[in-house]
Image 1 (tube, rainbow, N blue to C red):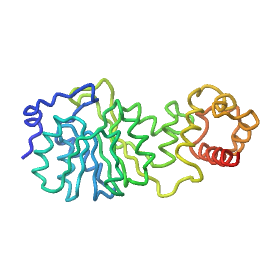
Image 2: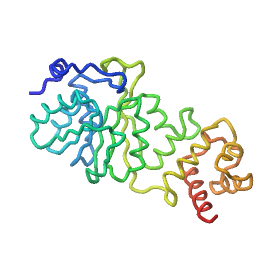
Image 3: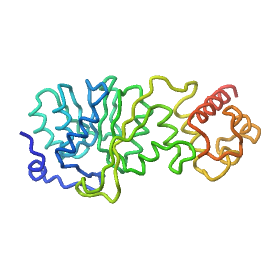
Image 4: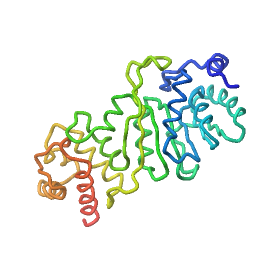
Length: 278
């Protein structure tokens, strides 16, 4: 049977800082995370990114009879995971690939993503997955608590920003668990949070991800300035910015942090329609 601590010793799986690795070794905690990750989400196909030595992988596989794909960049961990695959015949596929380059569509649709994300690429991976949100039945992801706060934030919250808007446009977000540094090996300097991202069945439409991304980037890049100033980065005139703000029933004197997700969506639709008409 796959014994996590023995596997780590056998393959000398000391966590690499360059890969953003911080492992959870507590079996009870791993089982709890696995149960929470799969609860209420269709999980015929499970994708785990950055499984490391395979503690969470094993906990997930023990939850039921479904297929899993593990994408792992670290060749040392791939060798260790091959032992775990033999304990669960025909259920675990291990890919020695970079998750930033992996094509999730190759797994089909209704993919359940579970990951203790490397913190150095966590937001980049999230944005990548948000662009493909319709592929997923749900995502349960470990972030630095600071990033989780941004995902959960609403307008007028200090943590509210571009990532808040993009995520909440596409999904419902909830925090499942707060984890102190001590539960990881090695212990990071920050508190972590397990976050559930559940794709919305219906959402504001009439504009692309890239349009909303461009709009929010302009608005939040100089978040302390009024929209009439920050939105000039979009190449709009003063009159056009007034029209853009009017489309969401807000004033050009607002700052980005005062604009709700729904209002940003209205602005994105106006902006995309305007560009198409030019």
